[in-house]
Length: 367
Image (cartoon, rainbow, N blue to C red; front, side, top):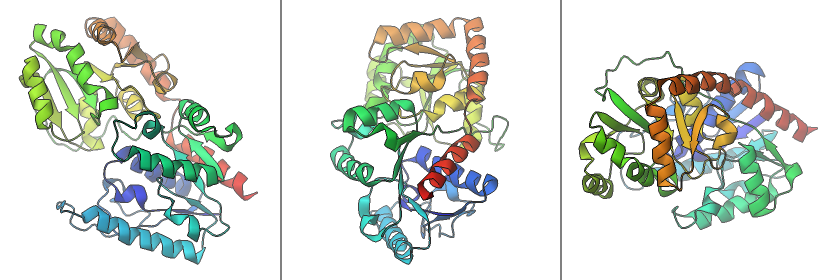
C-alpha cells in the first residue's frame, strides 16, 4: 500500500495543528505499519517537516516573508503534486486541505478527505475566504471515497450542515505531540502568576470576551497576568483594547515552538480555552499532559475531548467565564483534582491510535 499526501498544508504557515496531524500520522504509519507514504513537496518553511524525514524539499528564504512568497511556493508545489498524480504510482490519495485542483488528475484512484471542523460554514462572516473554502470543501466531501472527522462533534456537524451520509464518515481522534519533560534550554522571563491562552485570537476564539470577562479579576490582583502563546504579536486594535481596560501591563505575548510550550503550561495557574468552536482542540491534550488545570468552553467538541478533566463555562456569558476562572484560581484542591483527571483523560488519545484507525480506513477502501 502506498499513500500520496499533497503539499497544501505544508506550504501554508497558518495551520500548524493540521501540519502536526499529518506529520504525526505519516510518522506512525511508517514506524508501526511500514506504510509507504509520499508527501509531495518541493519548497516549504514548515517547521513540522524540518527533519526531512518524509520529504526532500528545499527550505528557501525561511526568514523572509516577501510578497507572493507562499503563492509561488504553492504554485510550484502544486505542479509537483500534479506530476505525481499523473504518474499514478500510489494506491490512495490523501489531500491535506480543501483545494480540489487534483480531481481531474486522480484517474480511478480513491481519495480520503479529513475534515477538521466546520468553522467556514458556521462563521462565514468572521473568516476570510470562508464561502470559497466552504464550496471547495463541499465538492470534495461529495466526491471523497471516505471522510475522516476528527471528533464526533465534527461528524455531527457534517451530517447536520451538509447532509453527509453517516456511513461515509469515520471519526478518528488526534493525539498529543508535546513532551512534558523536553526543554530547549532557553530561559523565558515570564510572570510568576498567570493564566495561559494558546493559539489564534480570531473572533470565534472569543479572546476579547475572555479578557473583558476577567478584567475585574486582573484589576483586583495586579500580580495576575494573561500570557498569550502564538497568534502573532498584538495588533493596534488589541493594544488599544487592553489600554482602555487598564490592563496594558498585565497581558503578554510570546511566539515559541513545542519544545518550549510545555514550560508555559507547567507554570500557569490554569489554561483557559474560551473558544466558541473547535473541531478537536489539541491544546486540551497539551494542558493535560503538562499538568495544567483546564478551564474551557462547554461547546462544540471540547466536552467530548476534555471529559471530566476541565472546569467548563458558557463562552457567551461573561459572568460564567468570570465565575469559572475565580473558582479555579482560588481553589488549590480543585486545581489538583483537574490536573489528576486531565492525566487520566489524555491517556485515551495518541498518534498511534490515530494511525491505526487511519490505516484500517485505507485498508477497507482497497478491499
